[in-house]
Length: 197
Image (cartoon, rainbow, N blue to C red):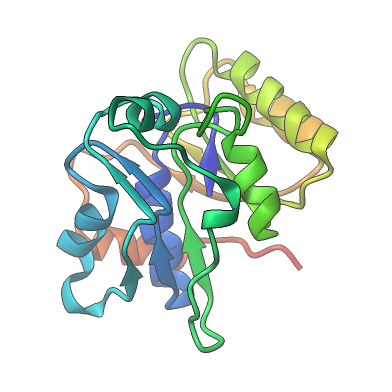
């Protein structure tokens, strides 16, 4: 699970997919508090099968800077998918795909290292067309497996049709604007996912 930038709705989208697939959850890199894992725990309680972060960094910043502040270097070969005994797992990235985790390594490199298909979260705002297009082109340039897009919020300037045409992949979910997120709303949204064949 990745997005066009931070605060796009990755954690909510992850929760919806966890509910739909009865999946496990993992956030490999967490920067700052509150943690996204803790947010899922507030929604799912003891139902949630989750794994500890490989890197839990105190500074709410990009992983490369947060690690620098704490005297750490994040390396790709530190990461291995948790063993889930065959259960699906939702892996939530940090920020967008070109967020650096070191001076020369990006979230996209971690996705490639773990051989994960991408579900891209795009929230609607002025500038989302540009940010979405740039992200889609980078996914395509790297030859990463692109499973689908989740749109978050109300379609802005007919962005969805433009971005879906560029991505050549389906919209698997549209998340409406929500004043408050509850476990029941997550469950209802999980039933509206349009799975790619």
